[in-house]
Length: 221
Length: 214
Image (cartoon, rainbow over all chains, first blue to last red; front, side, top):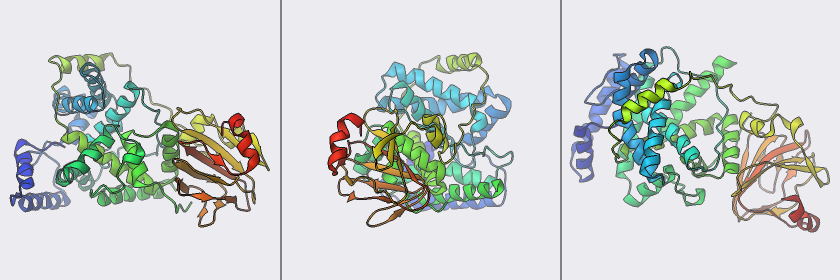
């Protein structure tokens, strides 16, 4: 999820050492505890609830919700594809494809496991591999899990916050290290050029998905 | 299935970013199909991709892009439910898709001493093959140039330092020189991928190398 201009400014300030960081994290903590109380998911602190918009597209073919998603993600997908080596015309074309796929596959989006940004990234990556004739990339076996009809709201909230947390962590990495990670996701590195240590807090995300997988395996057996 | 040998962070990030040659993508996808631990780690690496996308600068879309995207959606055929790929025997779906079935559908070629292999069709920058090693039989002693991934699908093999059973992946580079031996029990079947030709130390396989596409 993209930060609002206000939050983004806070992030910029934090790089220059301003004491906003603690405040911002405290605010995040508070939001998390609100969620655990079971309150309804809605946009908070200027953060748009992109996941709710995808669900509106899925359930109501809501064009206004789609327009908001389009304004947010299409220009980023376009930039992402250009950084991967596509020219502007191809990137524009593919970004439209990616957004159309978001509409068409909205029933596959599971807000308890991935943020909208993460889901859009995977669609954009696959589109890039097709468009730039990169190596074929087989996908792992599908698991019989789809979005649950009523996903746990605390889980949804956590998953949607991943992008912000990782974005903040990326911003704090030394510029060189951050650039390497970005290039890996633009499809611009070989495996041997990829750093073995990311310096990113991936443990909690992994644990959450791992738990969801264990739950699923129990249901299956 | 207790998996003890997993994919490295490096490989998972490269797979997530779309940086790998096809042969390695196939091995990663096959291992992740068997290993929930690596599936969860891959989910975390995909989330990094989400953060990179979210933090990317923007490039303006053309003025009528939203309208043409909505037109495109109108024109799209109803999403047909893609038939999920099926596992076949000990081959997880991504591998079964390459073979067109399970171990019975493989067109094996003998390498001698009961050892067999089958090359898979992948892009050229790395090659993938299936290996069939009868119990107690050694894979011809080989070293590596570049990177070699070996994923056990059935049975197990041991080398001097470790044991690799079903679902385990061995990641070997230049430094590794070893003699894996298949354990007793069912024949060991592995999926192996490398970005360099294998160099066999035994005389006969080395002579045969140019002919066998090893």
